[in-house]
Length: 105
Image 1: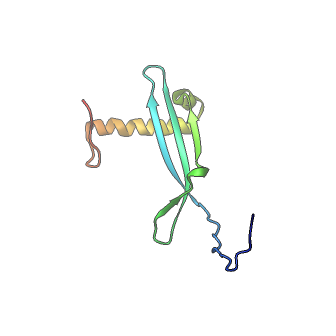
Image 2: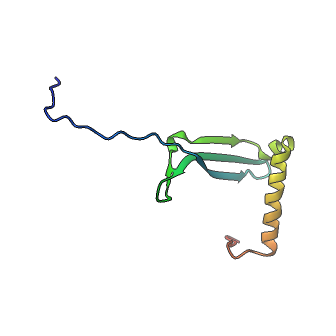
Image 3: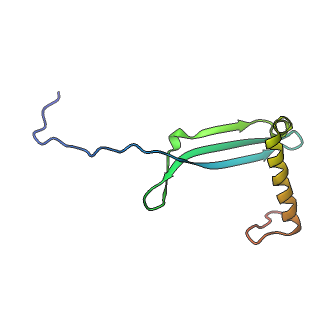
């Protein structure tokens, strides 16, 4: 049963937030000889007055591509991007930049 509070509690209004940036997290996974799949997560965020990111994970957008190589065959921009990545990786195998290291064998 509700009763009247003689000293009402007033909470401050929460201002609306505009998430004007997207944090991009990509995962590309080789599937042996059968292809490559990719997943891109886009998480909206903004920078607070101290420059710290404030994320809205409940508004995350996920884009999944089941067969990246087939998709690249139909999308010239994707094909160019993948070729650029492969060119960079081949260069790293020749001359490893100071910000990278080879792990494993």
